[in-house]
Image: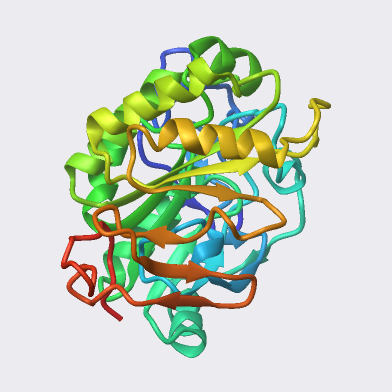
Amino acid sequence: MSEMMREAMYYKKLKSGTLQCELCPAFCLIPSMESGKCRSRENIEGKLYAVNYAKSVGLSIDPIEKKPLYHFRPGSRILSLGPNSCNLRCRFCQNFNISQYESPTVEIGIEDLYKAILAKSTVKQVAFTYTEPITWYEYILDFAQKYRDVDIVLITNGFINPAPLEELLPYVKAMNIDLKSMNQDFYKEQCDGDLKPVQRTIRRVWEAGIHLELTFLMIPGLNDSDKEIEKLGEFVGDISCDIPLHISAYHPDYLSDNPPTSLDDVARAISIARKKLRYVYGGNLPIDDFANTMCPKCGAALITRGFMNTRNIVLQDGSCPACKQVIYGVYEK
């Protein structure tokens, strides 16, 4: 047994010797010497272990905008890493080689991670990203509890049960949640998942006062209709019109051969969503036309984003320098 493994949290023992994981809504039943759907939790001698603990598919410094987070310390850079696992099985996964299959990893203990943050970052912040950080639950929680001076950022599908979410929330500074569709059948057929838990997570994260942005991967023929985008805008807008929404272009990958999303379709979706939301952006595009942040009151260009740099004139108190309109986000250095 690897020294880096740790007993998992949130599971129960059944009479048969099978364990039931209670971390996410999949509620996997895991017989002895087998693992759950996400491959990160294994039944070993009657205990559930996080076998992916501290094992990362990589470690790099990224622009915060790449997460994507556009209203959280714009222009900053963030140390990023992630596990070789996911608790959804999206047929269109854009990172399937590291989320759906075994891939090489490196061991990064929590002490080594902290040292890397100090050495490589001007701001003490770390993003758990690339695949699904929920499947790295114990590693993230252990790190966050020990190093309270580091801001924790999660790029997640939001597919987590309420109890583990509540335990984690006090340590999290920002999240980008991937809302894949407003259609339950889409989640079931395309992701082997469930829409309602994701919606519940989004609402709870906002209520908790954590910085929140959403990403919607727009797939032609599956979730790109005007009606779907209208439902998306209504759902997010009912929570808050200030939540930034990133509508990203899809390209064929993994098990999906739908045609790629056109620039015109992304522009159409942005126009529809902006009827309900103040900040809607386009992602995975060859141009930067839909990447800038405009003041919703006076129309001033507050944050301009190009391929190589970001220019931000939002004041550190989060206001527009021209009209003093409050701009949702975190802007202190």
